[in-house]
Image 1 (cartoon, rainbow, N blue to C red):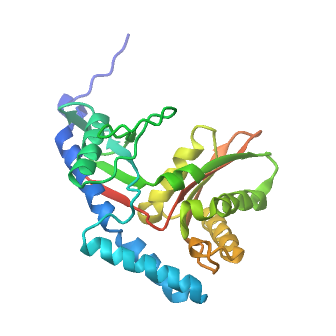
Image 2 (cartoon, one colour):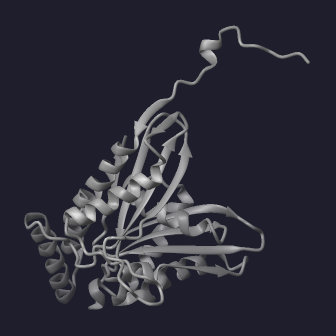
Image 3 (cartoon, rainbow, N blue to C red):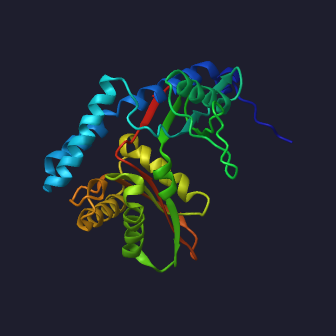
Length: 294
């Protein structure tokens, strides 16, 4: 056997960067505490911009109340919504990162629970059938993925029950086409109505698999603030969905008007020749995403 040995063994060794689980726990706690009381600057701007362009007096009145709630929450400080949501975390770990003091998922859970405890945020977790409240044992959704590099990017989202209940995936016939996919995505938001507190943010995935499409739709929500630029097809599809929502006349809190959505982001993923999944992750006007880089 002829083995090729590197001339310089030192150059062939990847230098790993150590990140402590405590750093991640602290970052997650900080993000949830910040976003519970203060919307990201882009979301604030979206809401104020909607107030300026809405023409319906009744809808403008609703948007004015939402804007005042946004200001009062930041000044209070009081939570933006009584439903402080269930915490969701996505951890993008560089392949050159080595975790100290334990795996990242556990640290993310501890950080989320710490934030809800320290911030006095409502513990909305319960057992599924008995409905027994779990108190401080807050369910936390954590997803970890490997990416190139030696840094960690952590995303958080406090998602209310009304929005989560109305988020869905539909499996269309494979030949249904673009129009049907756009109508399915917009239809999910319109069917949600007041239960998901419009104006909405929508993260949409067209394609993928039954398992992957909802994950990509959730990442699309974060992508509204921090994602890569969409392809031409993704941008035009999102614009088509936004147009359908504006034309519906549903309006903020379903009182009528043109501002039914504040943001729409779509991603396209390869799929099976026999499939056309469309996953829609809905979020209300109290859109509370966070992001930190370690």
